[in-house]
Image (cartoon, rainbow, N blue to C red):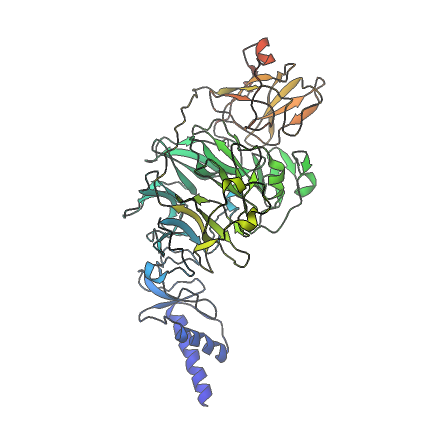
Length: 597
């Protein structure tokens, strides 16, 4: 009888606890209910007077003020036992915590004497933005790591991410939501203290803001055709679009020469929808009709990615590109796409103080350097790296890494090997220093680390654009390509575009000179691609992706897919010996569609 009374009392206590939080609980046995209460009583913090209980991400309905909560998830407390939450705005599963109740859950490197901002999220989908999805489906918050302590940086907002520190180290730009149901907007906040101020707002998401020289910023805006890149002044004026083909364009960094480093699907202009590949104007259903990648078929789809994307489908894997601040001159950073695409693509790139561009590739790290035409592997310790590598003044790197034994990303410090051992040394990985944990939590992803310190202001790019509707394109030798020189000389080049509905549109056909050169005038701010034809009109080579040209832009390429590291021959192109007037391939009979993509 005594045992029954104890069980009855325990069950009543659990029921009262649930009702106090405004929840109904499923009937449980007396022993199960007793176990839950025992966990609460034995917890090292216990239930503070006046606190409420949170069951499975739900919220109590008392006065709309932040309160201290204990977290009961099913049958036990989480590791962080006391949390501060704004019940009106916090997204499900996310809790923003004060400094006193959010200590690092693992040792912090005491020699980290520079404050670091990072994003913390219960769930991070690293490939979501590439197909127009939500990277933080359960919310996110910016955190400040300083003197071994972690504190929320913007507790006033329901969600925050994508911190970018100003060049003087005194302020940040970031994406944030005032309320959980809001779209992502762009905010600014001084690091000396103060309230965040709204910089840019739109009916749809604005993400990944980055500081640019001249008082401007670059960011990604969600559109019906995907994320487009834009720049704007810090007061929200003078908005300028940078991308003009369908797909998702996500800025990663602003290079020292002023160009924007961004990622998009490969080939450029391809898009993935559901389980099918959609290449605008050309329907492919699954992997049986995949386009070629540098002469080889794309690999089969894989389900190993956490994001659920189909690896191997064109457009599913990211590639990194650059574009000038006026939207001109977009190109791939390097053209060795085949191996990179088979390995899962390149993403989350940043430029290091050495000038190298470091990026994530299928969880590993690799780099581009000016002395190499191809990427070089980085012998970092085993782990799944999320990219966004940041260099500290002492030469160490800040990394976001998920070790093989962990489920979530943590912030770690690593000292890269000496430059002489960096590429090509089979013993480099074994000899490289170990990772040192700076911050981690067993239930949160810690990503996007950014050191808070001044940094050089990038160069400003002087624009040479004009208020025209076209631009000029000169190819020095279309026979050249990274995948091999054509055995049959091209006689003509066909210039194509896309209609707003996704069908291929012929803009014009121009002659190709005996040395492979051609000179055309093409429509501005529209998707473009070249198709090389022989004397009989047969296709010799066709671009797989799309590019664009800005109004008044004058662009010269060495060859077709030769890569930006290829230098031109010192000779006058044959096409200019025939005429210095470009052939009209602008589709003048069909007016240019402004803002179609």
